[in-house]
Image 1 (tube, rainbow over the protein chains, first blue to last red):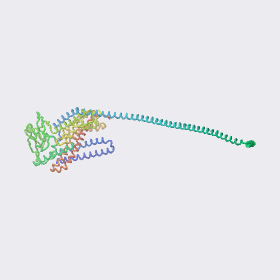
Image 2: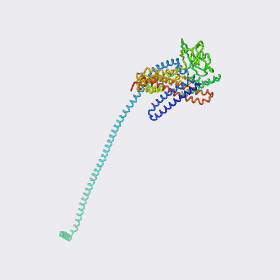
Image 3: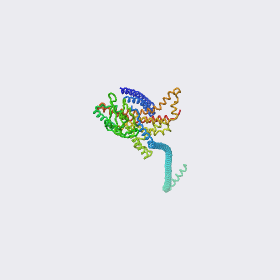
Image 4: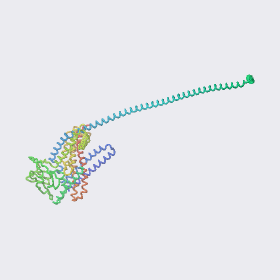
Length: 70
Length: 164
Length: 362
């Protein structure tokens, strides 16, 4: 029971991160479409931002893991 | 839970290995590699600059070459033109020379013909004169062979004079 | 080609690991426990388990180094081949620990941690051992893996340096051709990009070192049999993040602290809120670095193992048709993640260092 609640939590964390990274990706594509010369810089910034969000999501996953491993 | 709890033993070894690694590869690897890379980049930059310079030089050389070529071409054109002129003049000269010569020859020929003709005419005249004289002599001889005829002639001549 | 080998190995590894596991499970009528197997893999151990059942399978027994008054060095087989002691963990669950024999006498191994026996006994309450722990400086699986990775890294790097020594500053060939673009990438796109132009040189060696260390450990870690979850271990990532934090703090200038204690452009009234936030920010940034690397690599290992486990959960090789291609896909993704995480760790370290040494320009 404990594990499954943790799994729901991990799922929620992943959901949030998914939305966030999706937003970043979409905006980055828009930005590149508008200004193709800046694609290199946009890509780098996008990856960093995505990684930051992913880091937060992974906090959730770790908590989920801890719950599951209990 | 021990998944997220640090372990002292591993921390100790990680620290030892990482710090050693940092020192060893900074000294023996990153410094030589980075200096080599820098050196090469400098070399490449220099080579590029040199290439650029050479290109400029080539450009100016090319312009110079073009100039020389242009000049040479102009010179050649001039020479050709001169040669053509000279040739034309020579031909012209030759033509006029030949014409005068031929005219001269013609004139000479005409002159000789004229003189031949004159000579012939003169000869003919003398011939005719001699013939006439001969005839006249013969006629006169015939006329004057008798007295009658002498008289008749004299009369006739006198008649001619009268009529005049 | 190497990738192919990796995946063939992955396949062999997973089959050998699990097949013998299932045989073992079949013999003792014990259910195959995926969670336990995965946790066992991603955590550190005193043995290098290759295949076969948990106890009695084929393992490389690594040296145990204990500092407990005097220092003791002995092989970990004295634990793994020791006496298995079972006890009641809860009503319907049984736990067990390994009591050491021979030179390991007086110690016990419980959940891969070494405890000192108290009157020849382990005292375990709610699954937590309450015995004293000796200072354990053992060459564990992760430590051995780290040695191996570092030796491989040194071999690669020294051979590329040898190339330059031999040929001078020419276009690289061979292994140098692989190393140099990465070095130039770290220098130009990470160090130069984030740190002041006349200061980046001082930090480039550190950035290069963490980049290559993480990259090699990540990549080697995804090779079955020889891959340990080193960069997915919180201790290692904690140490690396700590290094970045210390470098940031020791190279910080006045401008950096001014941004923390009197952020320009923030009204005075907000400062009581901003200062604690900014101050905590000093530590949350490396903390996030630590968690990010740990969680990414651990998650990768877990996903691959879980996918392969599908076969053994369903006890049918036919499930391999589903799980193997998926595991292959995730493995390839993990190669990307290996590079990406090495890049991100280095990049964010450079970003933090860059912020700490930045001069005021407004």
